[in-house]
Length: 112
Image 1 (cartoon, helix red, strand yellow):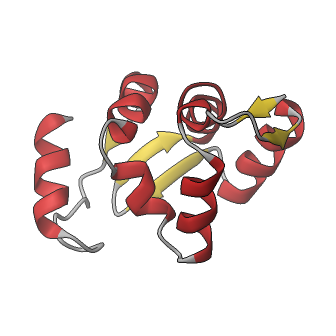
Image 2 (cartoon, helix red, strand yellow):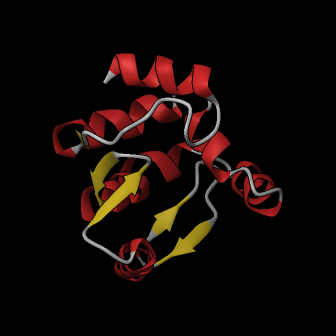
C-alpha cells in the first residue's frame, strides 16, 4: 500500500507502479534529452518520495498542474535524484532551456 506522510492511502503499490509505468508509455522517460528508466523512477516515486509528501501537497499540485514543481521542491528532487541517478542518461540532443525554467535546468544539469 502506498501512503502519504499523513497516512492517506494512495492505493496498492502494484497498481500504482503499473499505472506509472504505463503512463510513461516507454521503458525510459525522456525529458528534453534527459532519460530515466521508467521502472526505477516510478519505484522511487512510490517507495521514497510519496511517503514524504502530504495528501494536501499532492492534491494542490495535481489540481493546479504543478506536479513537476512539487517534484523539484525542497528535498523532493534530491530524493528522486538519488534513486534514479545511476539509471539516468543525458543524450547528445539535450538542450538547457528547451523545456521551461532555464536557470533550474542549469542548476539541475550541473548537479547530475
